[in-house]
Length: 185
Image 1 (cartoon, rainbow, N blue to C red):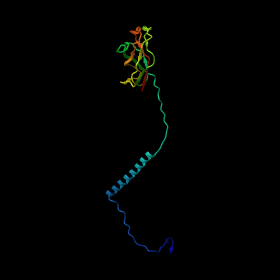
Image 2: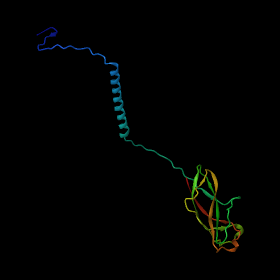
Image 3: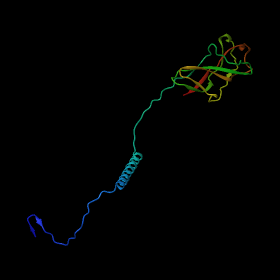
Image 4: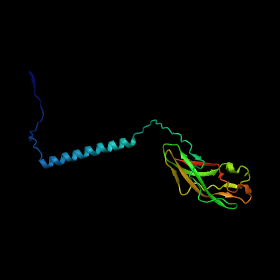
């Protein structure tokens, strides 16, 4: 039965007493807050770590490789001379002056012969020189480094050999030995 705005309900009701919520003790509140914060941080951190490792990506890149300028071997200049002299049936040191035109240091890896030996202009009749270049093992030991934009005098012990078939007109000659120098960055 209703009248106006009120309705009456029928049924069995029990009375309950509702207590007002009391505030938890400060220690309990702090512990709950710390536990909730720790749980939230762990969940967020684990999700972030998973996202970091699980993400895939792709992209492009580019680089330019500069060209190394040729390191050159030069003829002996004033003051450059080997420490030993060459005689028929013997060996002597070879002095090589190398120039590095690059803006960085290079290491001489190998020096090999690249042609026949020739005598100096004062010994133009020395055509049978009997002189050969004996290439040292590569890589050179001890290593030879040439600083950027500079020259270095490299002495190769026993790298020139003279056979006993050399002509006698070759006595006192200075021999040019064409060589190829291999340098690496």
